[in-house]
Each structure stands twice: as C-alpha cells, then as structure tokens.
Length: 400
Image 1 (cartoon, one colour):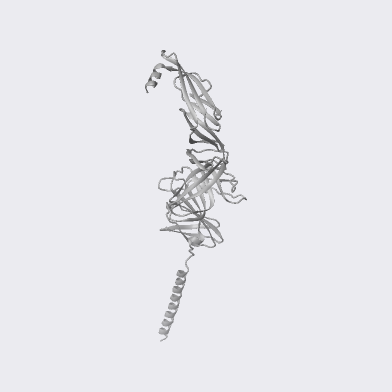
Image 2 (cartoon, helix red, strand yellow):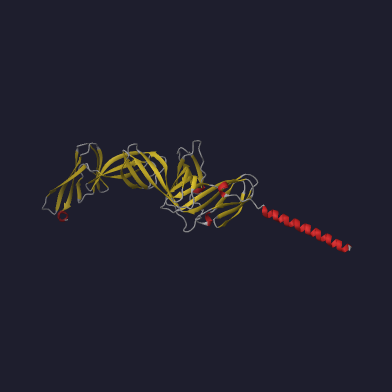
C-alpha cells in the first residue's frame, strides 16, 4: 500500500512537471520575436530612376528605426534581383535575412535605438528629360518625365534622377565600386559640400543650412539630380521640374548651300553640366522650334536650329573667264539681303569647287570658306571669291 502511494505521488509530480513544460512552450509560441508592419517602420524614403536609354531598373531605399532585437518584415514587390538586396544598420547588426515570396524578413540584434536602411532594385520605371528654352528671359529649364510602371505608388519621397547610360551586368545587379574620386556637390539652393565614395550610390550627401529643395551633382559619366517631396503614382507619367538656369543666347543665321536657317547659340554658364536631350524653344510664349543637343559641359555652348530664315535672301552669280580653255577662272559672287525689320548676325559657309585662287572677302578654314558679319534691315552684302575649275567639270555641271 505504501509502495502504491509512492508511485501515485511520483506520477503526480511528473504530471505537474509536464504540465509546466507544456504551458511554458505555449507561452513561447504565443510571444514570438517581434514582427512589425513595413508601412509603420520602413517606408520608402527615396527612389533612384534611370534614363530610359539605360535600363528600367529602380533603386528603392526604405528606412526606419528599431528599438530592440527581433525579426522584422517588409514587403518588396517586383524585386528585380535577389542579389540586389542590401540591409545596413547603425548601432547593431543584421544577423540574417530571407525572402518568402514578396516578404523580406530579417533578424537584427541591438541594445539601443538603431537606424536601418534597406536597398533593393525593382522594375519598371524610367525617365526622359526635355529642355524648355525661354528666348525672352534667356532661361533654360530641365523637365523630367517620370514613367512609373511599378506595382506601387511612391508618396512624398526623395526622387533621384540619374542621367547617362548606366552599364549593368546582364540579368543581375552588382554592388561593385564603379568610381573612386572626390565628388563635388554644387550649390543649388540646397547643397554646398563635398563627399567621397567608391560609387555614386554610396555617397553620403551632406545638407547645408539652407532649405532642402533639390540639387545636382556630376559624377564622372553621370549627372544626378534629386528632388524632395515627390509623389509618383503607378501607371502614370509625372512631370517634375528638375532645375532652371540663366543662359546666354545669341541668335544668328547660318547660310550653307545657299539655305539660310536661324540658329541659337546657347552658352552654359551654370555650375553643372547638361545632359543630352530635346530642346523646345519659346518666343513670347509661342513654340518656335525644337532640336536635339548633346552633352554640354560647364562654360561651353550648344547650337539649336530653329528653322528657315525666310527674310534672308541669297542670290548667286558666277562669271566664267577663258571659256574655251581647259582650265577656267570663275568669279563667284553671293548677294545676301536682309528683308526683315531687325538686324541679324550672318554666318556664311561655302564648300567651293575647284582650286581656290583668291578667297576675296572670305576666310579659308579647314577647306571651307567662311564669313561672319552683321546684316542690318534692308541691307545687302556681297561675298566674292575666285576659283579655277576644269572646263569638263563645268560642262558636267551644266548637264546635271
């Protein structure tokens, strides 16, 4: 009987211990490590969009603050490449991260408040630039058209536009250093500092004391523009004014092959370079022409063709000497008349035929006869030069 009581007591003790273990396990299951919604903790703070002639990748940056160790999760839809994920943490360490379809989870360890930045690439968005050139105020404006085909909206983010042809490894995204140089950030009502980095996306931008509106930086083969407080809706095109700058504009008429055309010489006196793109010119608020420009460094200029200069009339006359000789001397006379009420700067170019005897009132430069002068309203200017040509060339030209 005593043995039976001892056995019963032991069974009760075992039952109590097992019950305690089960309860402890249930408590552990009910209180897992912290998992917090990404909208509350890791919102998108900035996105990097590249020109459409480069690729359609979008670099997304999410940032947030955590106060304790645990497992956190964020939704990353439309991920372009798993290898592109980069998680950086201050005052702590990222132990591991993993993907479960569109959910990115990561485990961190920290003993105080820590900032976390999550960077990854998605598709698809791109941007194109166009320039609006105001001929009256002599001002040029770069406007960016951002097309967002991504699966999400981006609300109140810092938009970073990269201009240039970016090279990427096919079907993957690498985080290798591409540049190593000192990067000067120009003064653009927002930034005035210098930063150093191994690649442009690793550069730390230092804010100046003035208000943050936007900025620009040239990094070797790229020009980078960033704007704050931008909203991009999915499946929409959004136009943003990137920057504006004063320019020096000179109007002139270029005459080549007897065709007078109106051109603009636009000098870039600004603190940053201009990337290639289309330029749309306006006079008195009216569109007057468009053209395409190439990359334009600081303190250089580009040329924009506006259209035909109808009020500049060109007449040509050729006087042939020694008509029966195998080689004949020809005097070429070009009369240029300005029938407009304003004056024009004329830039004349002529690729002559034959051997030049006398350039007359023109200048020979690299095999081309040139002349530059101002032509007032109602005025006619005669240009004259002499060449020697073969008689057979003249006869052939007459039969054409």
